Image 1 (tube, helix red, strand yellow):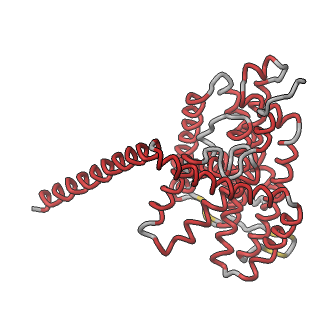
Image 2 (image 1 turned 180 degrees about the horizontal axis):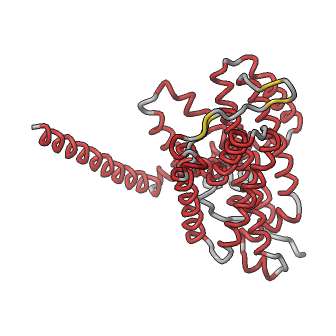
Image 3 (image 1 turned 90 degrees about the vertical axis):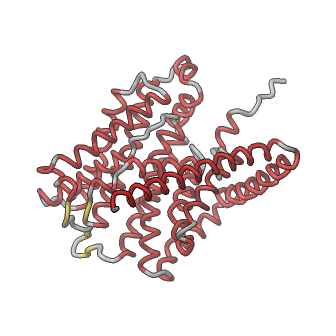
Length: 373
């Protein structure tokens, strides 16, 4: 009877899952037919207009240095009005903002689809975990070492994927993530396997030890501001323009004298270094790391932040990180439906504004027709 009951339960679950998928396909086709009709086109234009208005608001806020100063002051003082739970959410948002900024270099600027990005995050975290627990190296030297080790791993990955593009590059980088994950799970003598590494020391400055959530919040805020400053400077340099040229047309960029090989390796290396820095902070913040924190799903989340906010746009990826981390917490009261609503919103966003909430303004300028009269 027990076996029969289990079989019936499994069949019912399969039938329900099939019914949901079937209804989803019918709903998708219905929406598609509606959007191609005259009424659907009008609704589509209204939604696009609303999203464009939101984009213009964000764009004006970004261009207004006074508002940026107000935002910075707000970020400095807002923890005093929040409890530790919300401060920790903001800290996690800062970690993912740094990850998204690093991936934005690879995907948004250079146009390289890297599905193994979280592997560099794991390398940074485990480098600090091992160096601290085994050799007693403190946080600040490990922050530099973790970033450098992740950068070397990125350089190695870039060197072996020079001739690959598009889907082939994505598959190889995904394989790299799988290799790193297997190493973390099975090299017990070094990584402690699935049990992870416990007892990692928190950051400290002299006798002051970072122990409260607000301490880590201000630390990640400083690191995030530093990352934004450095990446923005690179973005506006000749290197950033070379990456964008490679993203638009690799053959044309090579014909114009850009060393495509060097620029690709540099993009992956710099992006990986920031993931390593974020990994070291993650290990220092939670004093525990395990392979479950560095799965393919994490790469998907960070990539979604880049795409949602706007590929190639620094303010865009930060906004994407904030939305994807904070909104699920805001909707936690609707726990049974929040992922459904959130997923639907993502689909609508990609349909009506695929360039993201805050697209890269440089691309629009570069593609504008030139008046030769």
